[in-house]
Length: 172
Figure 1 (cartoon, rainbow, N blue to C red):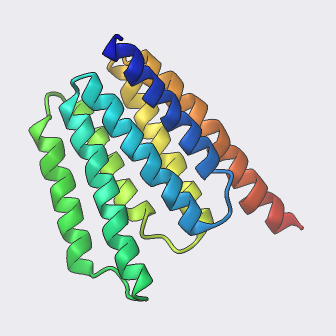
Figure 2: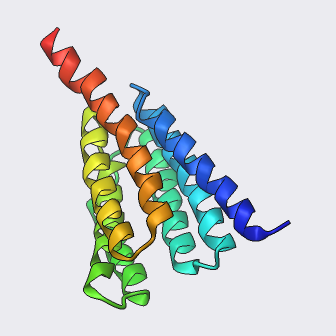
Figure 3: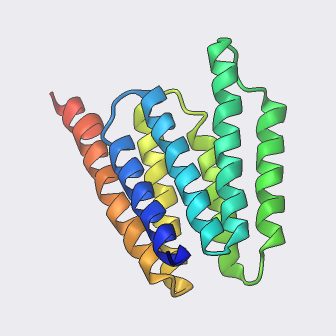
């Protein structure tokens, strides 16, 4: 079987995980879906031999798991660890840096770091929206059209989630 098509299957799982995540109003379940999406994305990138994407996605999983350990112990993630996360994000981005457009994935990883630290689901959705917009701009700028389409599809449930849980509930 062609690895390209296997990679596309994992790309579809990323979309499904992201769609589900943004339609849930429970922080732990949202983050669980984000972990799944990043695992699937890492596999997708690995199969497409985009090792930097695979590593960045695995780092996002690592961050989420470490932060969850602190949360289970009812402790805040230490500020030093957040600084380390951001430094690692910059280092991982620097390894693959070719053009100024490559700053966007670094920003996305930093936004992800901030997103998973949020206590309010509404903040998670808002940061996810900013993050996905950056990815869309990056995808189309780099002519990664299928990734751009996937991110556009993912953006729809984020917007719906913001409307359902953040805007509509405020009106009620």
